[in-house]
Image (cartoon, rainbow, N blue to C red; front, side, top):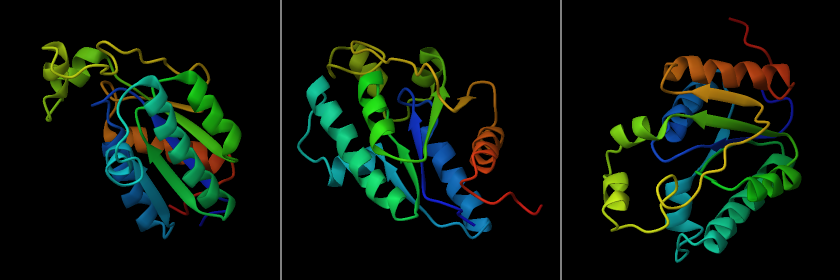
Length: 180
């Protein structure tokens, strides 16, 4: 049961595992009868942020839009999972300020592992110069300095990562501890 609305804010490189862990969390929440809304970066770009490019300004606008929706949902008692690269510290700090009950999860994974997982071929296109301003290649990714949870997807299973996040939500008082 949700005790109060919260936003789990995933950040990490493309291919780090944000969506995979989000999907697993949804399964866990469903088992525990906790309803959450998911704002996945790819889905948001298709619907809420269509037409935005990948300049710093457009990326910041995209993240601010996601943060605004998270803020509305969270203040109305919903659980929210936001999974977007969100590469810049400054705009993540903005999201943290806007959203009450904000839990930043750094999905940490070495670039070479992310490249090896790249089913869409985006890193290869970026390395070939076909995609410009690609995070981790020719655009920076600024690692979080004080994330509430750090998961290392090259060293942990999806279940281990999800369990760390659930434990943090319980410890922070956002959800009831599991009876199991």
